[in-house]
Image 1: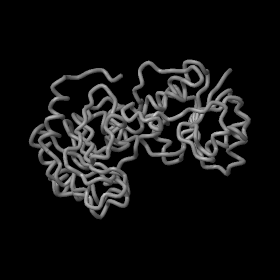
Image 2: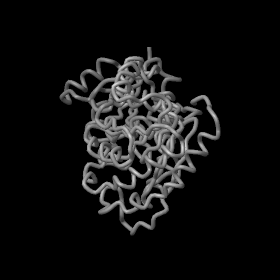
Image 3: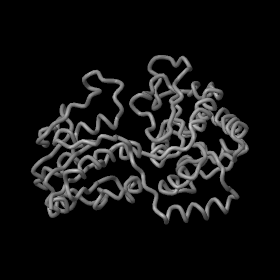
Image 4: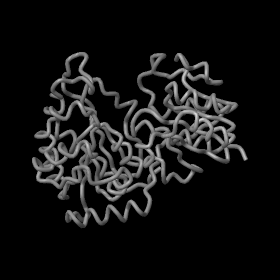
Length: 337
């Protein structure tokens, strides 16, 4: 029985989720598809029905390489290359090894793929960029839609949490963070609180503010400012997926949870506030999605990692967000891809 290994051990939640079309493409050719990812990202893939298994890259290098070698994979595809993720299939003697070209470690791959952005392509969606790795070994996915599957256990746990805070459907989810720890002290919570109020007024539904454990203070502050309910730090990624799947609407800053919401089929509005953001490349993909593009004149060089004040978010056009959300809901229900 032939098998393939997908290594997506770097990047963030969104990078791993946007690699799921690669896994679907490989499944059309290989009987076994196993994913190797960071322990923090296992929930992104844990319930995926096309994966034979999900391994976490938490062993010493020699032990991890030995585990890969024992599985006797025919091919490996590394969607986010580091020296370690490039070397693991090489040391494990996987015959066909696909990975990124133009890197010091690229010689460890048998098929080397030039990333489109390095040749001037600034508009191709990242799912298409990643599918180029599968295409290098004649695998493709006609529907390049990321997939996130919610297990029954996560739904049950979420139901208990929602009961504890008194939330019933319909509700709107607001995910106000971007996973930038350096921005916590200067994140514009007041304007995001105003957004929560605007969403409540427009859709007559309770607003639930979400965030990871490190974002709990921001989620709490936004909820307090917006007369909303905070679940910051109270849901796992799988439970967030269940929350999004049951929501009337999800509004999220450009982030991994934005992609999760779209992947479970929730009507999802992604906010790309900085001029340096790339909504064509990172837009949420799903049955009903929309983006709000940057309108604030950011100074040159202001990026999410280095912006000193996030004035673009403090000046966020709330009307544009509500209009984008209203347009999604006006389409009516559709089946997720």
